[in-house]
Length: 249
Image (cartoon, rainbow, N blue to C red; front, side):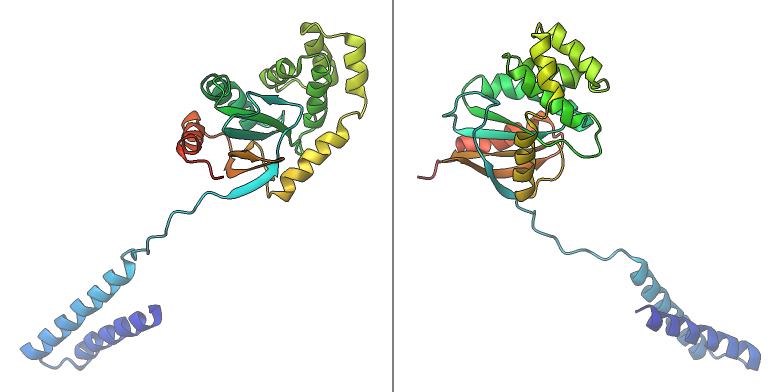
């Protein structure tokens, strides 16, 4: 199309130049023809520059995935009609935003009311220096019944996740220091965390935070994939859609 327009423009210039060089009297008909051609050239150029209307694309359907259900770190009723699985990284700022800003509302309105079973999964990213140790620390605190308290503390202090700082958090939570420090220094939970990361990868989940909002069937959770620190309204909409939908038998 550009080549064709260029040829038209050149032809127009040639006509005008030719008339000037020849210096012959221009009849009214010739003048009108040149003006007509110039108007046509202008219309072609304007049409070329005008943004072309793009065909409307159908909205993409949310991606559906299936992940393993159950686990040691859950909140809510096991028989809740909706299951929310989170994959998190303790050094991920977007994970922290979700935990501190969005999760409290989900817990109050859906988990505590028996509508949602929440399952926590770890997905420490390789480029986060302290994420893996933080995930281990939360599980070590869980041995003394303080998993969720440690999880909350770690996210509130995301910029200080070195071993010394984590030991201080354990002390503040009144954990047995010897037991906690021994556990945190070991590789006791590396295999479990690695299995969760593998499960995420097999479902195509590679970033944090990532969530699966769906239903538990047997030992699996199947539902829509929600990626990123989405606002509360996004989770509310996805959860309510499932709560209002008939359960397939």
